[in-house]
Length: 156
Image: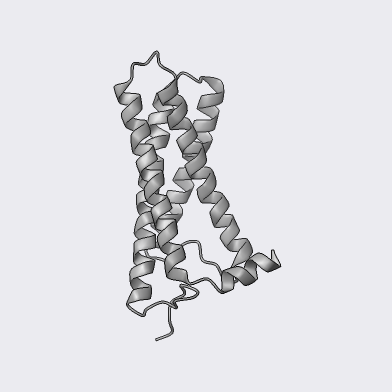
């Protein structure tokens, strides 16, 4: 991890945050497409449900893996650097619950769509909040309220 941390120390915060924001947008669009496909395609077709569940698995899994990577690679990493912190914590807990429910539902009854609708909706809401977090961080960097290398708030 030492080499990865040294590399991360030299990367500008803003382009990284923008790339993450684009990723959040992609997650949202994929989840929206999954919802539309489940609603538009007859229930006897399995692929829309599979697509929705895999979208939840990948989106939630990558969200939590990248959060863990942030803690592993960056000194003083803050998973929730934007107010209101409680909203981001709640969204993480809700997304983790949705992921668990989606895994259990898909394992127990792989043709049931109700859990997929709920989990996909929760994932979309969480990604919108994450996108807001990224937007706030980038605008704070551009306004000089945050450091351009670390994204930490500047001391006033």
